[in-house]
Image (tube, rainbow, N blue to C red; front, side):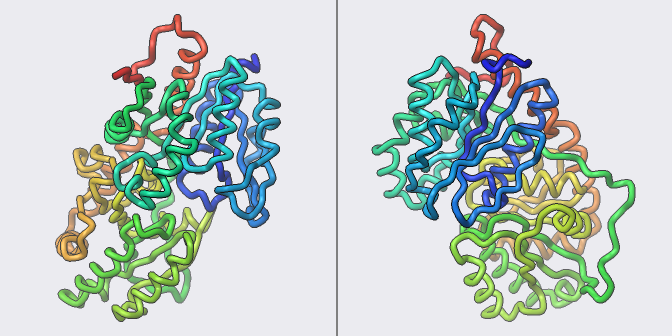
Length: 392
């Protein structure tokens, strides 16, 4: 598909690693689309503190802005969108005025199609967080963009319900995120010489209150107080990028609970370091209050790791396939579940079920094909609508 009208432009406020799972999803979708033959371009905002590290596979462009990404006018964004000559503009995320307004203006002055991926940002918990700021944003600019899109991309049925609860009537394409499948033929790598030999219960992601990390730390303190042998066999690793200074707060919680020898905070990990951490851990935990569809869980499953997660992670398939153990966001409940499972024999099979699950339904190739079919329908409504589309 070399016709520029068939090209898709992925637009996001942030294309750096600090955007976490959203940028990983954008890159995965882009690769899947490229493999399907779609011409993909990426555009994002670049603040002075940013260090974009975008793959050379795609035509990528960043628009310089000031240090405040949320309120900068991004004066070069309009030209960048026009120069992309894309027939589809796929907007990722909400609540950034310059991005939302420029996307809407692009739609108004072209014959192109506008697609929006909220990435869970319209879910009830997310809307309740900084509620008044988001109400103002909806009134000021976001509601007009939401009403103007040609299609909304939901990651799952739960997000579809959240979209409809906002009284948005555009067609919704329900397409999950995906994951790259690592080669596991070499087995689990040994820990580095001198490293703590206890098994690792891993959290990997953005350090933010919605992720339930503080609740996880409190649960771990209670679990090893009830069962000291658990603390001799397992430790907790909280890996990820700090969001607004929350890491310092979590480290203080860890000290207050006396967990210095039971919890570590290695900071953000990427590339080979991230792969090694996922490959060498023994289980994964995400006690989240709200998610779109967490990339970190799919990655853990791809490495055959058993997952402890909440229903708010919106991956009910994991519970149905016995690839995950359900926890709540209550420390007492998390503690009881960890005590019941971490000492039992069932966890390795849970991990194997997770690998089978992502192999069957969460590959980027499959996601790319579904998005490609969606774009083709948007550009030619005479085609049959793809199966992923929901009209009511």
